[in-house]
Amino acid sequence: MVAAASCALLVLNGFIIAGFFASLGDELPEALRNPKIMQTIVFIAPVLLLVLEWRLTQALLHYLDEMWHPKSDPQRDR
Image 1 (spheres, helix red, strand yellow):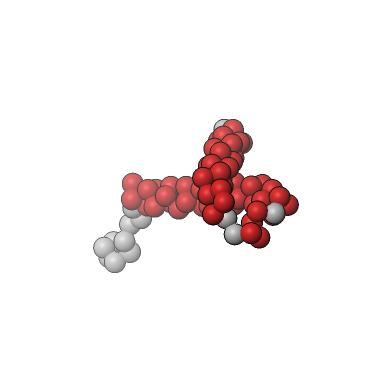
Image 2 (cartoon, rainbow, N blue to C red; image 1 turned 60 degrees about the vertical axis):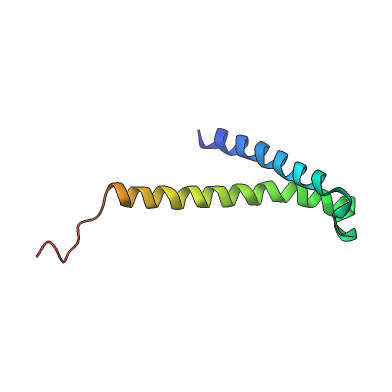
């Protein structure tokens, strides 16, 4: 399940990055118009987005878990 979700997110992230660069077009700095640099960014950016998405998902699940299952307060148990 995790692998399928990761693959789907990578494809979606790839489309997002490709669309982002396509929309910028000629507004990109000259250094980013180099095909090697562009290919590197288009390859690495979706992976970095995936890492960020998993970190945010883990943080949200941790927050929700603490909200749904609060730990007992040691001060109140005395």
